[in-house]
Length: 109
Image (cartoon, rainbow, N blue to C red):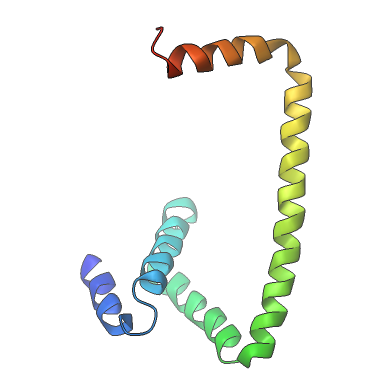
């Protein structure tokens, strides 16, 4: 496995250095560990999807990026709402949490 990553890094050194091989390896290994997807299959799908975006030109990259940014913004808003709701529902524990943070950070315990 690491030989494949090293080979891809050598091939892509002049253009993308280690971003593409390392990130694609992380995605495929995560899919294998979480869902049992075979590395070759997830890698092939990743190559096809990336090729559709990259070889579509700057217009397609901009279109995909704008849609991606929209989903990311909604995700961040939902996450922020979840955090606020969690804090509100556990408001009685705030003093305990803060004291634990300070005790652990400054070595009192």
